[in-house]
Length: 395
Image 1 (cartoon, rainbow, N blue to C red):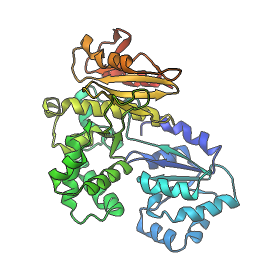
Image 2 (cartoon, rainbow, N blue to C red):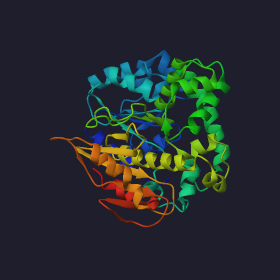
Image 3 (cartoon, helix red, strand yellow):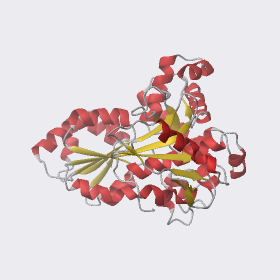
Image 4 (tube, helix red, strand yellow):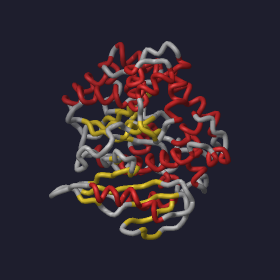
């Protein structure tokens, strides 16, 4: 298994907190990360029916099986266990004895806040970043391959399956296990169509009414279903950066899949030739890049602090990364050939920003599909392969 950037943070936080929680999507590598970073702890999988029943029926007896602590995997299946774990932690405040993992940030996050506030630190693990894949012989060699395959670790094993069949099963398992746990979904096919519609809108503004009309469901249902996809780390709704720009920006969030390979599968893209010729190619490249920015932040234990900016007349900066009092604009282009106009939206953002005594807009980056790195006015042109190095520079 390739090393994960987040691994180094687990021992550091174990030295300071009784509980470390690792959340992230299914199959992102949480279990292996926890076992690698804490080989001294016993492991128990609460997705297993036997263990789930034991933890539910007699939580005190269940926890008593682990006097030295344990890794409790997929703990969202027994959220009531955290109240009993709180009592154990309060009796013995030894640090680093418990590691929790979970795939539902909504349900698990609420339970952590209620039961383990002040006793737990939370880390988030997404699928492989491009930086983490750099040491792999299976690393993507082209932008199209990076976008098409995505980052789920199973797809980079030595005996990796083809992405199509594996991702189909991933989607089916997600709906059957996670969605049905969080929502009373009577029509499994309807939720599947909803996921397909979301994939078709990755990189675009969210229109709840439009989604509802396309699927014949209500506004509130669309909002709830989006909430589940976000809670389970399938999508992220990126909000506009409003501060310092007054009323000159749009308010609607943008939808991004956290794995471009999953979005490709939902769009029925079957190979590399199809992905580059697809009408959504530009949006899929943007999706991959936004995911890389997010991974760079979360896997180093930093706040994501990602926003976008769009004026009412349609000028948009794809990502505005907030680092301290500095705003770092990032533009994303799928083209292989750079153009001086690519930096235009960033220049417009600088013109419209009013930041008296506040934030500073730093030189920005234009990430594109070619292989040349050079200045572009006050900003920098960055080839897609260099995204990891650039992001590592940002504190």
